[in-house]
Image (cartoon, rainbow, N blue to C red):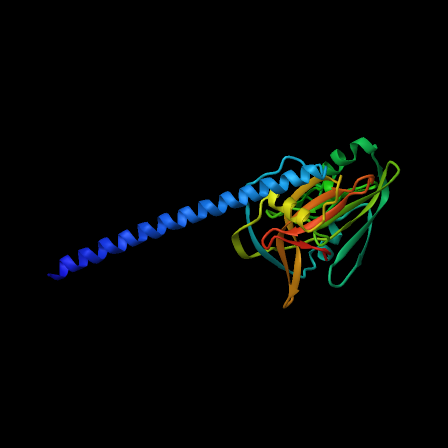
Length: 264
């Protein structure tokens, strides 16, 4: 038997083995998916039986990764550009800018969000204001919150604008800011919106007759390491217990699919 013939036989066996393994993997994967889908359907039925109200939930698994930032003084160094404001600072670990308007702005309650969306775009009002977007789930009463979005949406106290109103007057705001977000690892498969709700239910974070008011996938604090702060994608879920007007925000790590009891 010559070398070429032996080579051909090995090649055919190798290709056949790969086809067999590929078919086996596909079949096992389909069974796994079917089992997961079946299990999720049963749990969603349990959620409905417990009269927990949820919005329409996506089953699509998004992607994300790990981000990091380092301490910065961007807010402190840009103070001179702000007009008609008295500025102070607090915090060494998380630098926070406190602004008190010299002349408060009069704004009707119904017009607050629309007004602020335009107001933040003026650099003499807010530094880096075009990098923030309105966060309705984080806002309440006389405090309107904007979350930083510099290509990556961050729902965290390290990247927020919080505007304070007194009656119909905008009297000031606090600001935290992340100057640079670096990608540590990207393209990680995340749990879906439905998976997040199911996990919260399994962990007894959703009580009978509760209502899921809103959900949001955004980056949030994970840990501090070697002078850097690490952020991960999290599902933030606004939950309103039965008989209450208060909305509690639940945090779920979208990579590990684990409940974060206390968001730093």
